[in-house]
Length: 320
Ligand SMILES: Nc1nc2c(ncn2[C@@H]2O[C@H](COP(=O)(O)OP(=O)(O)OP(=O)(O)O)[C@@H](O)[C@H]2O)c(=O)[nH]1
Ligand SMILES: [Mg+2]
Image 1 (spheres, rainbow, N blue to C red):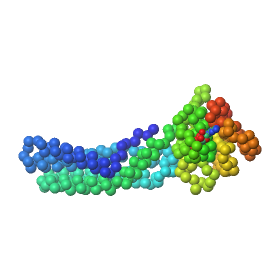
Image 2 (cartoon, rainbow, N blue to C red):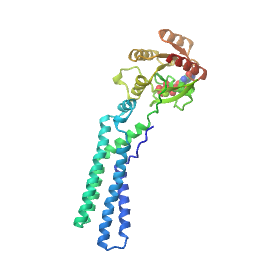
Image 3 (tube, protein in one colour):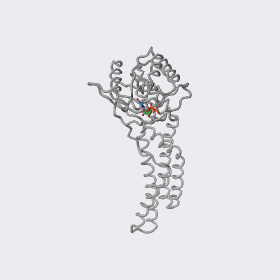
Image 4 (tube, rainbow, N blue to C red):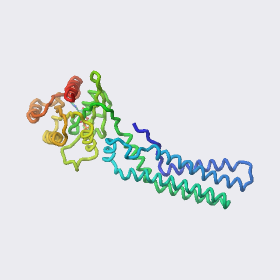
């Protein structure tokens, strides 16, 4: 979804620029001109190449890295969960700062070499330009990290959206996989899903977006980790309906308390799924049913395609 530029580390950028600078300088030295003239030309060339290489990478970052404000609101909020937005702005600002300084330094150096016929200025340029790049080393690392995060973001479509939520290990990913065939990761440990994953499913002429969210625990918002906060954001910003999956094989109290919190906090259409009917005891399922009589619910196994399809049809009707 994002077309993000290559971002070098400070070290890589300096290495690349200096290597190319030496190569270009050598090429000039081997021409047939008086020695002094050759040396001066070679050093001018070195300076020009070094700054050209550094500038071109930094310019690509400025030109192609989206500013925080350019990101759609959902992505801004998703990013807020992971990093401080001021750091984002500061990092892009630092790249601009370095670019300006290198440009000025290059101009200054070339004119001094020509005027004073002293190639020593080229050495000074090398040292100072490297030090400008080193000074934005942390900011480049930060942008590399931001790029990694942006690339992990889901591609959203403008489609009616079903968000699947519930406790860790409840079977959310199994449900989304059975229903949509999308390649989500499933495992018998909590917090398997760490990102918002998306599958699509068509019914007649309408395509629906089905979002597999990370597990949520029953605890206060300020204690929630970034994995849980992403699920909250998906619910808040994207859901036209929520499927809340209950796992009868684990503690029921906290799951019900989470369900009630969600109902109170978000004004949402809700369909409760009691999962794992293939392995849960009947008594256990009946006990849960008794506790959720005020909700619309369906008993399923997320491993059985017919069950998942019938949930999907009910959900689409509820969306309307
Ligand atoms: N027997 C049985 N096992 C199931 C069913 N649904 C899920 N499971 C198992 O429960 C475990 C957890 O399933 P996941 O789909 O990864 O659960 P999740 O809710 O996505 O978990 P997190 O991503 O960690 O929040 C896996 O071992 C699944 O195979 C079911 O209907 N029946
Ligand atoms: Mg999962």
